[in-house]
Image (cartoon, rainbow, N blue to C red):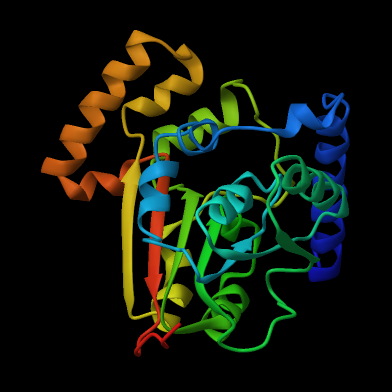
Length: 259
């Protein structure tokens, strides 16, 4: 598939998703939410957000913002937020969500491989489940370009090094199992462009046993699996490479500029 065809398919896929979501919103109040509703909807989101540190007064980019819940949480924390997405449909929801929650966010329609921002524009970059849609070499170059010296980028991404999990992803039905034709979780080799652009990089896994929560649902069993994961992954960090998701933290070398 050519790059142009892939881009068009991504736009069509996510615009269709956005239309489906829009039908469930009957009033602006339906778009209101608490920080906890977003930060705790998956086990990796809150700890990944914590890696951004105190964002008050900082310029933060929500990289592939989708529904923009992250943008809203960042703005509530005092960040100057810019958010972009490829999908015009998702951007409409994002703008409505920011307005409904009373925060200011600058929204832009853009492609993560060709960002329309000046170099060194942002102190922090946040992204959730977006890098695995992109050409990593192009995305890594753009990330480095727009991130200020001393700045941080944090991404949470689906991970594909667990053979059993990959079999289940292909064969087992579960809620939210929708993706584009060429979409696949990241592999170790996909991190090479990021390591080249950002020598200081950390990768931490989430949901080893708790990935079964996609099938068993919420409740005591899932909480018990999450409890086991926290202890297992702390004692054997190499098991991160068998997890369902990873949190990737990138730091651009240099000194952060004074705010």
